[in-house]
Length: 371
Image 1 (tube, helix red, strand yellow):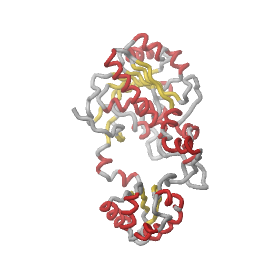
Image 2 (cartoon, helix red, strand yellow; image 1 turned 180 degrees about the vertical axis):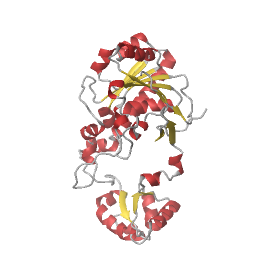
Image 3 (cartoon, rainbow, N blue to C red; image 1 turned 90 degrees about the horizontal axis):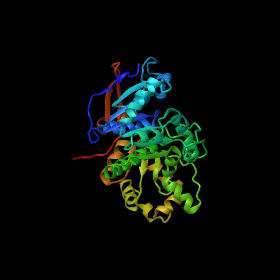
Image 4 (cartoon, rainbow, N blue to C red; image 1 turned 90 degrees about the vertical axis):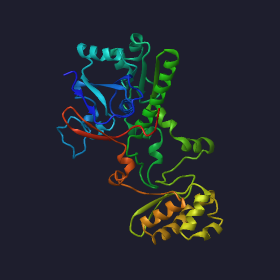
């Protein structure tokens, strides 16, 4: 069956891209996240899936608690809201013709095909833009060289770009981030490129070929950790949640009721407020704690003092004091607690598949845009 049906969203977001047609030749997370971004903003998104593998590979990436017979997984649902799904075998001429028909009418094509496969099938940028000059062809690759077709999943790029080396606890093995963050970062890079290309087309009528790689997206996101090395030669070591440049920032303490609390004190004013709230004003008279640089240098001693103080107060009491006095701090929430927040509830998108399966996921857009 070429078209297994269209999942109809139960609610509709802003339709800023109504009339825009996006064809998604992409699987897993990065490319589909880009497609869902446009779906959330009102575009028609056609997702072409490989019929010979029963669709996007993530349909089968299920938790042990998910029904094995379900045609979707929670993972798949996370970035595939509001799309029309076509299961096609692009090696079959009739199915390829369907895909090419949609691409010929598209404003945007999103692809994570290997370049050699795309050229063989005729769904590469050059072939599609020859037929559709206004097309914006958006490609995601694993590595900077598009001809490098080495397989790469998110954790590979976390390792190659240095994230694994700096993530985890001191004297413990590296730890990967628990979401495929490199995929998400690459999706944001590609969204930005497509939006620029759409602006260029609006001004000139010309299509474009845009692209990014997981590796370059990861490298671009090293931010201060990259500059720390580039400017000082500092090679960061694993610090858990702690920050290499600020203290107490990312430091976690246990309250009297056994609940953890995290501090994120980023300014001298905030540190003074912290000391006032916790009756630790004497710390402000100690040169070892008077400046952020001194606190970073003497972090262990400072944390010993804070540890004993937090053992005398409950989490709720501490959070109330900090909120009232402008001290940045946080509870460490599990998913249940996260979704007790009204802000999280407001970002849930629901949808039923053609089989009647209810699915939920978070919005991929977290900005306001009003006309």
